[in-house]
Image 1 (tube, rainbow over the protein chains, first blue to last red):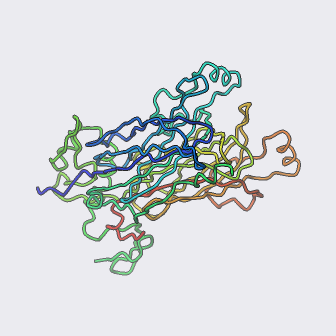
Image 2 (tube, rainbow over the protein chains, first blue to last red):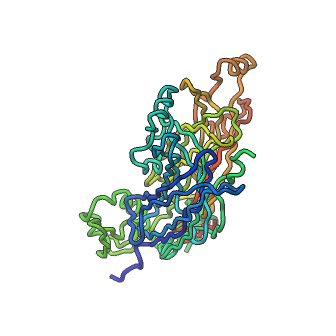
Image 3 (cartoon, rainbow over the protein chains, first blue to last red):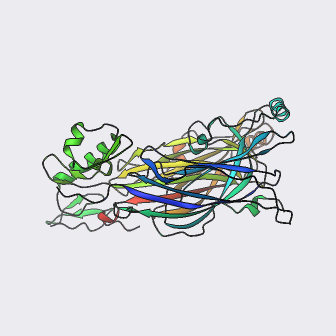
Length: 204
Length: 264
């Protein structure tokens, strides 16, 4: 019986974690990791990374720039469980402890081409005011035990969060054999920004 | 050989009588197709079962990866026990996020969402059909961000009952009490690719007494049956006011739709 063609398709993602906008915080670093379904497996590149610590520039832009490379290739038989990149941003608080400043996640785009995504970053928040003061004082903020929770939909009903920043990512996506397997990913959408631009969210 | 005239409509047989048939496959074989559809649905949902009955029914080539073997049955393609080629079903993947919401008067918002498909043509193979986002209190600007992932895998036999995403936006105050902020729905996009959707919302107004009570005490009328959100059947009874807008970014990935002659 002749082979019917490929049964596995490849997804190659490269790009960078470009920059962040956190008006209230400085000296931040970020960690990224990929979350994917059971049918996916990374074949090349790094699934996780930690960036350098960056400070706000002295000029009027107040930019926080990481320029941190991302390079990974996945293979899969099923688009269900499409990889998501999960970002966690950390920084020092007033007392010098390392606390979380934001979590965010976005699906890797599936049309081949160049994509820019600006994602909101949020932190879990305590419900009671006393607990908020205690955690500020002790330096132990609420954080997720496993940042991969951010990429899942279940179990988020009971969490309160506060969104307090944005991170801009740049992706270049290349796929192999998706069309041979019958998948139609639509027209290439290059340079689409996710959601309203940060200038709409920031005051002034 | 009867040709399908309109994909979503009737298929006329040779002697002119209507044969109601949605999403008619290319007229080649009738028996293996039915077997193939059921096979595709059954096999894709039971991919954890290795080998056994499914293994001998399909091709023998497999690709093992870290101890799991990925066989051709993942794609719904292969060869039946009688040696005829089974045909693959049309599949659709909805992959994206509920990004957030703007325009609501309240600050701490969360969203209950669900996906509804009318009729029996669409079947959800993988993914969670409904859920609830986290409660977000924005510190910057007025947009509440949820970034709630949506990943759904449908198999379909027809175009009717295209999936609809329905949303209920609620606000939660510092005491933990929830109040309805708006209902809304939008169809899952029908062309492949990434789409940014803005879903407007509305909330039912009550009598002037109920509106006054809502302003002071909170609460307010809610729908008794959730299906009024996405169906137009009983809407004429309602008097509503506008809420804010929910922003979504949904990507649609289609498979084998072109084999059935569907243009999208």
